[in-house]
Each structure stands twice: as structure tokens, then as C-alpha cells.
Length: 78
Image (cartoon, rainbow, N blue to C red; front, side, top):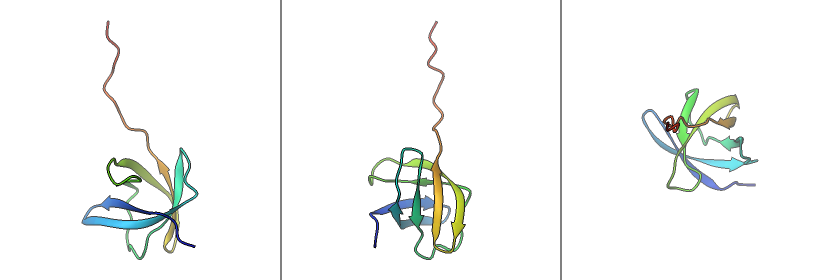
């Protein structure tokens, strides 16, 4: 069974991966023979916006990732 394809960017290029078990906090991905994956990388689930993701675990070509919160400027206006 194949999941939807999503691009992710790591140093040295953009790769596609299959996405399974997608939730608000993370997903399982099939990496399709990507030899090295950094601890943090950008992933796009809709082909337009990117989200910072962190590697939680990896077993061969399957990995569990967690979506990292993006930092925003302080919006406290006084």
C-alpha cells in the first residue's frame, strides 16, 4: 500500500517520500532509499508550504517524524 507523495528538502536536494499515519503532530514516512536524513528538515505536505520536521526514529526506509513549531516574532504590542 502506498501513501500520498510529499516532497521534502534536505541538504543536497529535494526528495519525495510516501506519507502514512498523518496527524497534527507528525507522520510516518517512507524515504525511498534516502541514505542519510538529518535530525531536522523541511517537508511539504501540500506542494506549496513547508513545515519544519524532526526525525524521531528510523528503521531502514521508514521513519517517524514530528512537526516542529515555527518560531514567530513577538506579537505583544504595548
